[in-house]
Amino acid sequence: MNCFNKDFLFPIDPHRRQVMARWERLQIGVPFSDLEDHVRRQHPAPGDCGLYCPTFAIAAEPAAWDRFTKPIKRKQIAALEAAVAYCLAAKVPEPKAMHDLLAGVRVMCDCFDALEAAEEDAIRKRAECRVKGGKARQERLRPVREYAVHLCRKLQPEGGWKSATAAARAIESQVKEFASRHGYSIFSGNDYIRTIRGWLKANGSLSASES
Image (cartoon, rainbow, N blue to C red):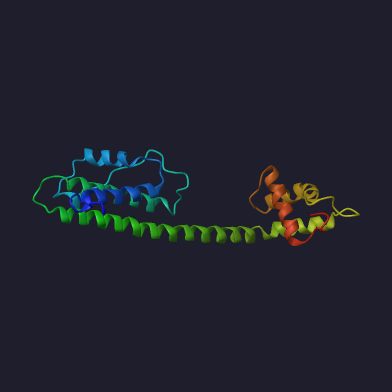
């Protein structure tokens, strides 16, 4: 026996569920009810929804939001807040047609979806920037890297280095002094040794047993 579809008689509910589903996709740890309560306090009226100004803000934005994704996430929250305003206004018995208000909900949901696609592009751009930044940094430090390789070969004891770490520790102070003298950024502690060790391994300055 087929169940009666109540969405035809109560069209606001399915639209609200669509908005709530998108809110959950944000994964920001804030209940959808908090957003609804906030919008309800603004008393959105059927004739004013087109001018509704989103003001909802989460107390602590996720650390994963960076300069690429943060603006998009904020716009998504604003779109869903406006969608909630349309849903609430649709419940008010006013001459303005419910059909028009629910159309506004769909427009805001479409806006959210478009922003989701834009976020994917932003994440891709972030990855590209990190790759470019890493390459630029490697090129900037090339003189220091070449100096470290030179020292490794020059100071290599008879029988070779015991390990890549031993080689890095042996030349660390001289590499650090060279970098400081020529204005290159200085790493601290083990990070410096780890960087030098990586340079020596990548350059092939060490034998298989040393690396």
